Image 1 (cartoon, helix red, strand yellow):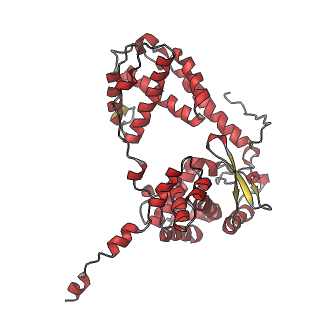
Image 2: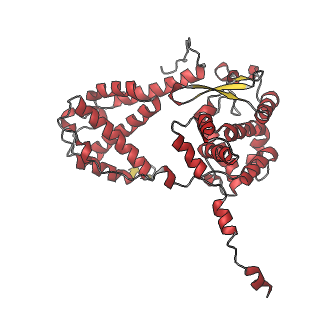
Image 3: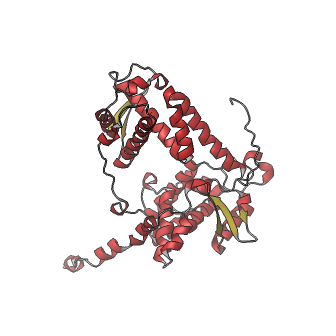
Length: 377
């Protein structure tokens, strides 16, 4: 595939960019499979048939890291110099205590390069995912009789805060208005940011309004095409997790900002490479925006709304939370919001219903102490 152009022969209803994204994920998975131990062929087939592509990719990355740990930190368990060389016989020597030691290692570890030493620290959620990936692997090996014992019962539990225990981070209405004022007027931007804003302000505003109105996932927004929209019918199509298509209605404000961007700022088709011609949101180079660029855009404008540093700005996922809390706060049905945001379980949506946007601020405001009278003295 090196230096070869990717040609898509698409006979499905999906747009080419969705097919290309799926191909990219599958290619990464195949690359990882080729790096992992040879005896895992059946496990790779098991993943392909039972989990979503992105979940499969995450599992493979985690298992490769586990194999790298064995090579670098546990010479008593393997003599291999590459992940591919690890044998089934060596895996049979692994006990539950060894996996527990691996998870403990993952809490805080170092990686040294020629230029620097990097320190990695993982939270309980990440540790739980790494534990789950290894657990799925060992359960499969036991199920298919490649291992004699199921050692997963001996894996130490990892307590992950329940969703209700985590404070939901979302913009409040006044912060949303400050953010939208910034993208409309260029207020609070640095000189360099203002230079870019002059060229992308209509695009940036359309992106923020789409996030705030529909609570889209970053992948759903990034994959939007011009052909996704039917302005005559007042609707557009998105492709969600699990390969599901969803038709979304357009309201007046969304239609207005999108048409303003498409007609008055977005490059004409003649200026765009054929591969990116249908992409809705384009970079300054005339290519489909990357998820990374969209994430940085979100952090920049939300940091203005929050009056904090760019680094402390919010990700697109927190704009999704902002949409959820705003919709529920305006009295919309929790089940309607669940359908709009594509939550698998209504319990996820209920978390946003339980989150009262200004409850802490109101409580503290009602507990003001009469310091002004003392100051006047």
